[in-house]
Length: 88
Image 1 (tube, one colour):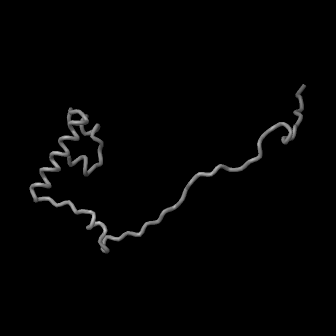
Image 2 (image 1 turned 180 degrees about the horizontal axis):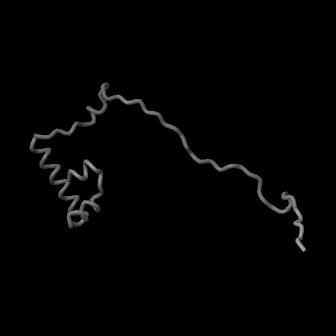
């Protein structure tokens, strides 16, 4: 469970590390989390704690959408034909 929350590992990787299936790793993580919450020894801050004025963050969003470059179509009429000198 600690690897999941601390290192953001997937359940598949955690399961492979300990020789259990992905679903077993999920069940163990959820069970352990519920036990810790019910014990009242650990407190997870709710949504309101994140929205308090002291935790305010400025966000900058930049649009980096790719746009195609307009170029003339290549065809035989628009291109200039160059004759190559033959080396004899």
